[in-house]
Figure 1 (cartoon, rainbow, N blue to C red):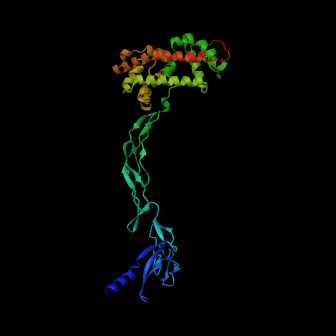
Figure 2: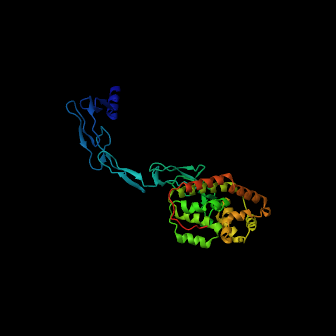
Figure 3: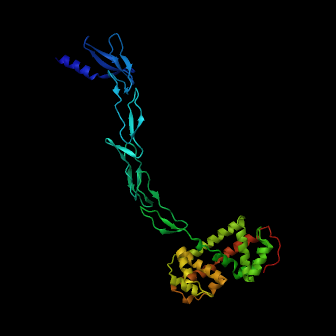
Length: 386
């Protein structure tokens, strides 16, 4: 009885063993009562006839719509029964060695028996791991400095915009990007206070006339343009507008590039002196009324406060005052009635005046004068402008 049970188990299990490089299975022949090691059939085939002591295993190809994907000792191939369900598509058709394989469509993943849509990460959360046909999306909360303002199954958190050249108009959050306030065209200044300080100072008026006319780098200044400056501006202002004309028409030469760079450094220093003070319409109105000439309208002040960063508001208003009064900003500041200003504005204007007459400004003046006088090329000789 024990022998019969053991033999039955051997036949039922068809235990596979390895002999050399060939896969074997144990077959018990009931007719001969022999236990044989038969060769397995390769993928794509099945056992048509078991081996005997005289013959090897006989294998046959799987019929249509059937497959065997492994070495086997089976008497028939598996039927290609898999049918792709709704929202699935075939990724591998059934053939002799492989079953039919299905996959969820893009944007879906398999959950038990059904294809479900990938989870959308809500605003404030981004995709940490993209969903696949086998797994759902993995979401994670946006860290500091990142944001997501959409519900999406594919979008990660985005980096907040950095307002390097502009002030922030709206602070970002995990659900919103930072918004920068672009400098409005109405905040642009045609002639900067640094340029006026350098080219309208008493020192410049006394010594730059011949230098500018005869030692500037090559430019397209014409006698008609120079004559126009002579006819439209007073002698004390002609030097400044001559240089302004040269600056606008000579943007490519090395001296002009260096000059712009130096002036930008000057302007940064001036903005630093002004600081980030909070000024009201009342404060700025008092400043404009303390200057000589006709004061600006309230609407000009309000528009400047709306369109310009805090530190540039004073500079823009001074520029508007100069245009309206046809004046000289440096002279205007010297005639400013500062005792009528609020204390915080008095301090600002005092720092601004000190900066415009500081040693740093004279050093910049000397550097530019040296750059001009060291230039070897000359303009076409003209009559003296001043």
